[in-house]
Length: 275
Image (cartoon, rainbow, N blue to C red; front, side, top):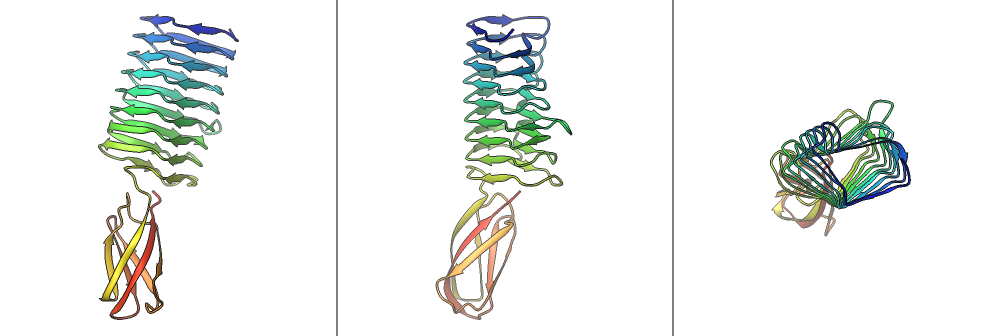
């Protein structure tokens, strides 16, 4: 069924999936409540241009909402996902240009998982402005995906934040707020096409800078405040008496060293951490 509007309907306590939609397009769902179903709350497959607004998809005995594959331009806006058995939202292979925005995702083991396949990667999905809290595993997982954007989310009181698997490319993680994350805030697996952008996240600092003062010394050590050991450090000085300079660092501090003994001057530094 395509080109329909469903509004203010309870779909609950079914023996399988709550709402099952396949081979359809351009449907609008407003204030649908999918609760306490034995299977998935919302199951989409080969569906295009469906929009969910202010729906409640909670307490289902499987995943909250599945985009099983070949689902494109699906949107979930201002929806609630509470206490589903597995993921709140699971996106399968070759599902592209989907948007998950301003949703309340609470007390699911996993929040949103983009899970493509080799040869059927999911592309251009956006996870933005969601509150994702009380996940016992990961708030967000990205696997076999290309150009996923994760921005302006509040990830709160969970075991782990964002996990980007090695099979993903061109992920952008920016302007998110991490609070009370017990283990890894952002974890990026090595070995893939590492062309990710990670910047501007509160609680997980990847760029920092400041000043460091040499007082009759050839080296100075200071805290950098980054989430890990810097991968790059840049520096300029307020005079030219330093000779040349080098840097070393660990996961908490940077040491700048100049070749001039008993140097007096100020260094203006910038450092970056790429996980």
